[in-house]
Image (tube, rainbow, N blue to C red):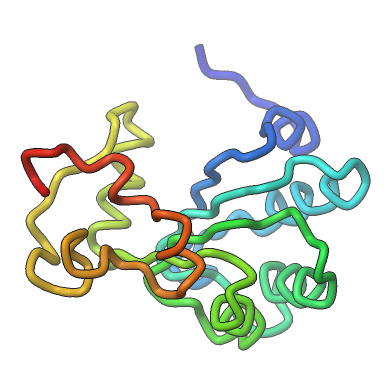
Length: 168
């Protein structure tokens, strides 16, 4: 059954350590208001924390919602809001890039087409996608798995935990 919720009701339903998918192709249709409400809830209650953001090109133009949030997170070394991010391109904001380079959050990548396809399939209620795209490249789980910083490699990453043994 479909249900229409107020933004505050929607973000209250997101538990700690959730995967949050954001589509928006550089702000074209990014849900900025909901992202802001989610972060405001974290600042007020400390929850949800440990979020894993999965996004196609991240909507982080300077001065917009994710750029502002990333700047606040960067200036708070004890932040627990964001732990991991899968993004094809970290955008124009230098702050998320610094967090990634300094290993303050895990960073993974897929091709933009794969992320878009994945988000579409999950939105349809399917478990994800299998693709040969990236095999033999740094995206291949046997050759780096799309891990883009040492923290992602150290924590065992996103891919190898769910990779079927016959594909390894």
